[in-house]
Image (tube, rainbow, N blue to C red; front, top):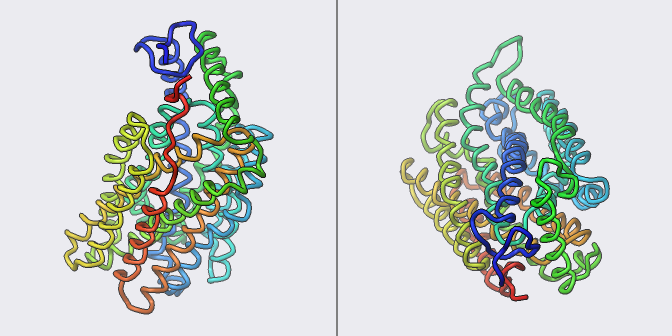
Length: 443
């Protein structure tokens, strides 16, 4: 493919200082840090229930099954409204709809401090899922409207490192908030929900002022850069349309979209099956104080931050997705099985670091597969379907781990089940047809 010049509208490789490089660099600088911040807040509001459980379960007399069901039922609400939410975003634009999502989930997250019974716990977690539905696939859809195919896995991975970074900062932050226990007669877990819900409301208002819906509206891009980006994305959209009609029905009936949904289900089941129980797993292994447990839980997430972006970059450079996904899933499964097999706290934490690195490394290549062939309304529906079905794993994982723990009084069997799910995901990944990023295909 010809190299880019300052007037080129193609999407292939070019010199370091060309228009395309400048356009993508400007988009990356403008969008990714802000989207990264939004996702950190989102992920914190999902997983902080794991840290709240260190106090809340005893206060409210929740056993493992009650907690596991409540933690996971978030994803049932999420599933129920995911596809409608993303189709609305496609029609009204990301700026207004992402702001609505953030404000409503921030208010609901803070209201988690009012939970008193298992029933109210289930209801509030379900409503929180409804409120947040569409955020993640909406952000992926938004990324697809700004980034050409080559470099997309890296952009997704950079965005999704927010989940791992949220784990890194979420532990120490949640541990500090739990220490507010007794202030104005509120328990530490109530302060945790209140103070970690507030940023979502504030940032939702910021979204209205900061977010730009499409490249055509991007006044912060130079004329040349904006023209290049629009032409490049339009070219890719036409290329995708040759492979697949750009409507929701086609996407929802696609076997590859459903296979991607099952693949993502296995990854998410493991991520949240570990994530929601991680503080209690570490507590059981170490017997440490709540504050120390919160610090130790940051280590697996820190490992994921270090590993996931290089894996995504290599996937982009080689144009290979399937084996990057499968290899990451196998590494994660080995880490979980090693955690289940050892009784050494140090070895268990090290194994959890390996598992987290594998799980998070699969995400960039995993999402790049469907984004390479879906566009427009098909992308809105297809990405939402994959995320909604996949996120049912966020219900299944925590619930299964809690159920098995109640039966066996151990986390080992639950972790083994999650590992088997990841091996299934690896098997599915290698069955996909080879997908080369659209801008690497010959003209």
